[in-house]
Image (tube, rainbow, N blue to C red):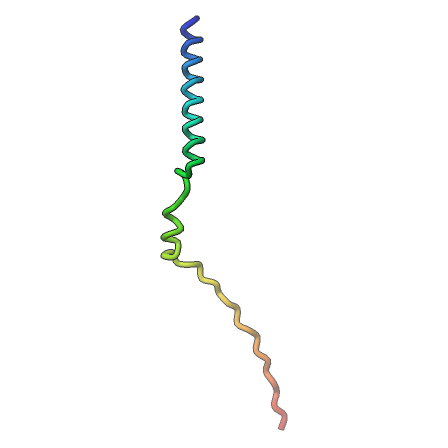
Length: 62
């Protein structure tokens, strides 16, 4: 039974160490995306279809 307590305490300590390492990496910006902004201009934008403006027809009277 004492082995379970030892393994449980070791696993909690390891989990805390990994959590602290994760928080440190996030704060230092390791997970920031520095690649996408540099290639964003290479991607084609979606085409925006413009609706034709309505024309006004004037009837000529003779």
